[in-house]
Image (cartoon, rainbow over all chains, first blue to last red; front, side, top):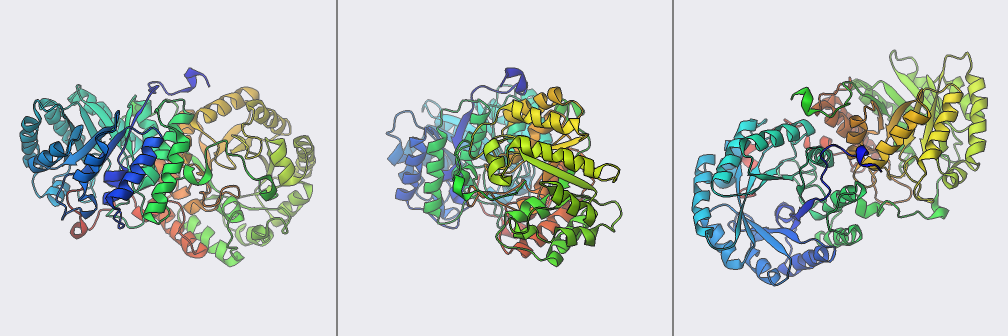
Length: 319
Length: 319
């Protein structure tokens, strides 16, 4: 495959953060024990995954599935080379995350006023103000501060989200020293043209920010959006093993893009992730067993591309 | 969305052929009655679908699900504006298709010798020779002759398929007057670089051929392959409603790319298909009911992009 065949700005290496333990599990009706979560994380580590959004330091009452955030971080922080990030909504969450020993704290806010109000019961401005407090708390701690903008591509309540809203929040993050900001496609409303528009504006509005794309496969086009991101040169993506999760607004809909399908696509495009597909297929099977349900990821069912078939089972005259 | 945001050669209009009644149903364990197939086809017609690969004139013993090919064509050929194509493996099949009253006859062969032998029990060369006979049969009939090349992107028995094998078959089709040739991704082995390579070679080897891309979502990257096809300017795709079908070589794997997800993606990219998404979501629901199982298509579960959520059901502190 010649380089000319690839899209113009396609990166040669992509950084994949596994968000299954956080975004995947928070939307599942089955709640895993800490030991089960660790089994899944270790299966992913065996496949070469090093970056995890491991949990969320929110109220255990609001998200019972993530109530063991502290224990999970404590059990994993001794492993060299691992990068553990966790979501925090406010100063209290950041204190708990720091105490547990995360490598990065991810402050989240929604680009939609309505979604932010429903989610964290405050205005976007109030959320942003709270982040300054978290930034001060982290000063000198060695822990990285990151940002996540939920509903960056559309809101299930408000519909379209003005591109400027995303840019304004990104600028605020840049102002308080944040480098990595994830654009969250919370309910699967991203499309290739919206990915282009948002990335181009972000680069103008907040040029110091390195964007991460976080897609859900709610409407089946998650990896088409990744193709658009790659064409724009975006080299950081978030995904969840097996496509864990779902959408609280659409029963039966898919969750995050499946990590193993993402790694398969990137592998086939000659893009290095440092992650082994065979190991990811195994991890997806662990996730399926632990959740006790079929998960939406595909490549784990069919096997890698050159997994050859059983010659005796061939049907005839299929076209 | 500015035109500059779109990929270089992206077509403004795309032709979608619905292959659910043929490729979808031939791989399902549930066999629909002719009346049920007609209910599904009418739901698709209500959504604006006009081009159907409606069945396959193969041995009813080999593919019992398609034994009613003749009745199905007879029931539909009176509808104005409809384009009905059907697969034929040989002269006998073509005679039956002609008699039934199709608009186009699709001759199929595999790019893989092993797959072709297993599928139709003859060599690729013997298949191609048989096509000349079919071409003569159709002369003056007003019925279009088309070609389909199975395993164009890889074979479950042989693995990688040399790009020249596809080009040679395409040239043969061109020599006997065929204009439309579909590259079949029979078991979901296509990848974006292979799509580029095959399309570029096809355009050199057989410049008179108009390619159609026929992807399966076996490994989850079907719409990523469509993105690559669009970037190359390919404007003809085949898909099946609901993602009907499956893969005889991979139990549990997905079938063709889902027509409604394809139409959703194209709509959002500003590409005209003449097909209405709401109608397609309805047709996917009809397909789900008729098959009695969950189908892999996604947008029918979540609804169109601006389907807004129930504000009372919002979860909190999700990030």
